[in-house]
Length: 186
Image (cartoon, rainbow, N blue to C red; front, top):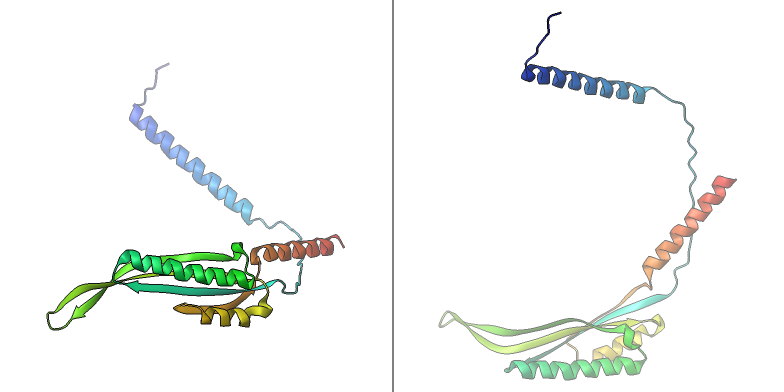
């Protein structure tokens, strides 16, 4: 019997075409099977949860600044002012954990001279923001008045919000899931 010999490159081409046909056929068969309608029944159950808003807090921000011809003097003045503000809010009844310095900035001002068309460096400005959390929202007006009387550049607040919103969201989701589970079991 004569021996057949097929060149390697032709054998590879034939095997490649056969592989493509097998893959394509498999995909077509899979698509056909996916298209076959199978009867399934689906029951959708929803859960609901309601919660009263509780533990509201009031957020305040006190912006403090100081200007001086010397950088270090501007920073030292700022430290004195911020210490005074922090001491006053703690005396008011705010806990240490609810008083935070959020922002600190020191920069040298520039002044434009129109006659020479140049800028020159002038005084130094140091500033910071103290964030204050008030847990007794009934006292928000009192704290606002106190902050306005202190040596602050500006005061923002009260901004009312829920204390630990993330925990309350998780609790609500858990309650809704339990409600849906009860409905599904019935």
